[in-house]
Image: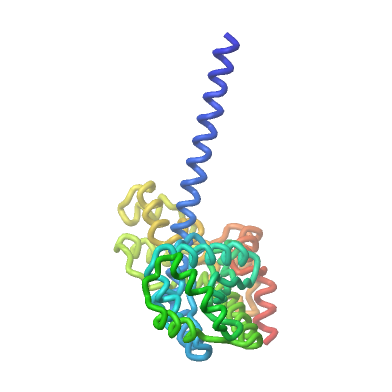
Amino acid sequence: MQTIIASTTNEAVAEASRCKTETLAANNHENGNTNRALVDALVNSKIYREYERAFGDLTGLPIALQPVETWQLPHHNKRNENPFCSLMSQKSRACAACLQTQEKLCHNAAEGAQTVTCPVGLSDSAVPVWMSDRLIGFLQIGQVFRKKPTATQFEKVVKLCKEWGVEANRETLKNAFFAGKVVSQKEHDSAIKLLTIFAQHLSMVSNQVFIQRENAEPPVIAKARAYIHEHQTEELSLTQVAKAVNMSSYYFCKMFKKITGINFTDYVARIRIEKSKNLLLNPNLRVSEIAFEVGFQSLTHFNRVFKKILGQSPTEYRAQLFAH
């Protein structure tokens, strides 16, 4: 009897463990999809496109914004791509070495700006980009020499290329290798500073950019957005909005998050916070009045959500506005 009970218990524990593992995997997959949607919204925004162009014109460096969960070369086929890196991307073993460097870089950059050097001596740098309290991606630059490459260094690279199966002849390799951009320590530090400032700015405007993105979406989601905007000051439920667009709550919930990248509750909260930012410009309105005006049912909840999204309380945000 005890053996049977022990066996049953072990099976139950194993099943619970399996379910937990599957749930974690599903959550990680879902978070990955959400992060990609958030990063896509930022990459397609006007502010990012203008900065990308200006940064490239000023520094001659490639720049990319990548989601946390990614497995691709950030600068491949991009403007200012290093010619040697472009050549290496043609072979899977060389690509694998580059991807390992990228993985190491992003792992180290979760807390702040980091730079790593790849096997051929080129440096890549990354800074984290946050949306509220959530890491969504990395702003990256790279494929540069921080010291002028030498003939000895090139000979080592030739050996590496042979190991990787790169079929380009020596002259082609040499021309591509020595065509790489060289930056001084001061120039590199300045580029990292610019990158850090822009990453911070992207984090600040990510909420607004995400809500205002112009990506194509199914008519039912566009209709749902319009309904939410129209009724944002009222008590809104997912069931209510799903009914307004003639969908079941279950399928509406899944589709809304898949298309927008965030769940219904978070989206409504962000819409309300955006409206509250405008109302905070009026010094005659109390914070509590603004909270209820935009649809929050309590001042405490409003303060908590506002700080989660913008990183500061409504009072701090207002004080910053009138300090300038």
